[in-house]
Length: 233
Image (cartoon, rainbow, N blue to C red; front, side):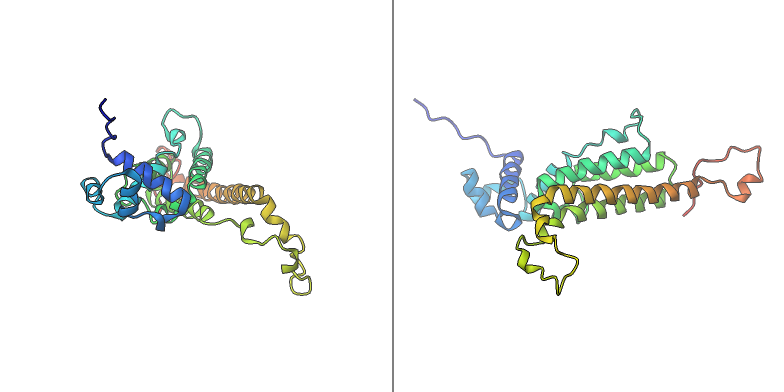
């Protein structure tokens, strides 16, 4: 009886194996030798699909970007720009929270990664479509990436030890409950993200009113249609 053939090596198989290693052990666990052993192939065969480890990690990062919901930026979606940013940010953070070890790669930006570029394109296009000037739409995209990836790089609550003796009231009079934070890590971290996100969007909403407000020159031209958001820098 013929032995079953091994599945052919492919980019998808390599990315799947690399993703599992990153999730389980972190970025340093990934090497072409380690991946070849996991996949049961010779090391050089990986180079038929990827030139080096960095390309593999880029592909792993892009596989995470694919998981981010972009439907709120579709032209047919009824959500306004603020609701769209809010819901997209939650989806983006959820994807990063599920794969925290790959966040440093994602934080560098999309580079040439197709899914990452689709995310950037969707956000920028939606903001310009909503009336934000292109320059400000670019800044909003950058701001959201800083905030979301930054929140996923580490846990605030997880940064405190659960040893009450570490917080001597003589030295830290306001940290009497800090040893309890680790037990409420998810509640604290998700609550902090939601609080920060709403504050960020509130601030953008105030700016949007300024961009959408007609200038004195535009008020002086009543026969012309005043744009909702003049193209200011």
